[in-house]
Length: 340
Image (cartoon, rainbow, N blue to C red; front, top):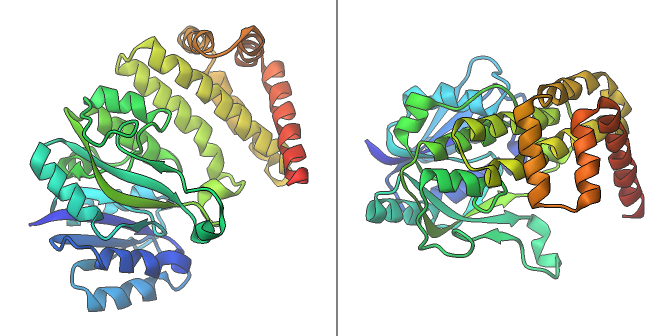
């Protein structure tokens, strides 16, 4: 058995893949494996992976046989092959400090916590040409010595006070697995993982979360991007099922409504996506419950003035108001784009 399994789902990731593989090979911690899961790529990803596997025995090449269509499904495909006591996930374009795995493992050994979170830096290749320092999430509100319960970590993850990238027990992968309902199911999964934790701790290793990959799903309008609205509603339901406080699920209900509005605005500004409107309206229809409305109203009460409360309350209850607000959001977005 190795100490850590790194899951690396890959689909047409040739542009940045070698950098990610090299960053893993250069880790100061040695007792790990990397499961390179090729989800039937059509570019040169397979060649890059196989060449790296040939020179570093800790890397294992897995081929899904057919395109599974999501990183979550690829991760589940790899689960039976994992030999680590714990696991961590990486996208095909992320980078890491050389001590990333060492710091994760050391903190896990010292604390016995179920999940260990590194610092997360929002990374761009051209960062050196910018005047401001890159955004970094450090510990819990800057405190790496903080310890959170799983419920506290779940609540903190909802607004990205803490990230979702963590070192987890291998049982979370092999017994629970990743949800596979859509392109953003990994965000739902890590929230479910947090709820399964007794204790969450932090370390000062750094995970560099790439922001300049224009091919990433979060960077361009697409059918898969629209899954963000459904995922947000599922996370809100998870919060309700977990019995978290209204002060937690209320603001997230507002965020869920705003996500649906933003996805509808994306459809409005991209004519090729107009046929997708029914998907977002279906998510909005699922918000027409007494529980969601009460949660949303509590979130608006906690954060927002009278005008904001009125606007979002109408958008939650009236399809016409929802669509009007989406059109306004689309207009504002186009104005900003034209001035950029």
